Length: 312
Image (tube, rainbow, N blue to C red; front, side, top):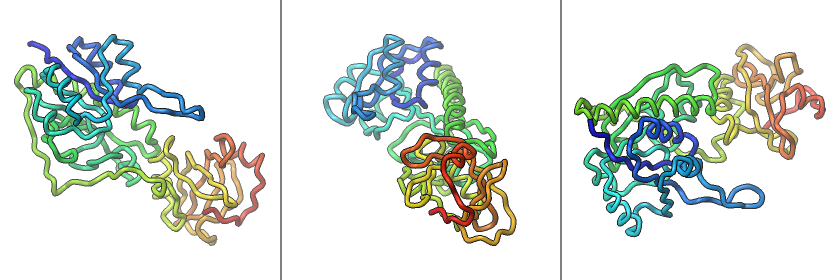
């Protein structure tokens, strides 16, 4: 079985397991395409994407076009003449000229059970919406938004307390393993394409600042799902005495309460209760603007809060 010459396209940490596994399985990676270095931090120092750093460790040729649709990059792409493109969280939309070029197609790892959760933030929205199962799909790319034919899917339970960060790491590895299986099937001629039923599609739009704002009129479980789905970043938040209060961890307790939504109760060993529509959200891990992130017990030792104060 001849291994296909692969052009890898990816940018963040989520793409690293796939690149690492392709390298370990000795697939001929003819190049790695990633986003340009970006200024970060207080000093706005140029920082390389995680995929670039790993690719350079492997001695692979790295390309960082501003836009892959520009003619200058398309010339490079055609000169590389890949048998297959593998794309994992690259961050740019591929033009038709790239999608249609490789004889063994463009493969994408998508962290959901397509057609559910197409779009920019599938991991976050699955948790926010309270899903109890998730998975990864290996898709042959077309010009639509995550609408191409599926080669393989693998389902896995979504833990009741699992956060975005934890699910991110787990599905990145699951997706890498499934990618290798898909490439093997393509190479030996056993791969089967399964069209998506677009009538079952659910979209996962890009996160906005407002997405993380907690509405204490919602159910306690919905608020906790929002907190889980945005932990560790970009983080759910509320306000306390006019200051932003990020919330990283909380649990829901349903039952009658006689306080207005957002009202703080008396702290217990479990955490700080805040009234919601159908019970309480028990805060466990927070960060007030200008302060360090800390467990709620440590926070309350340094910040005097009276029961009845309203958050938000």
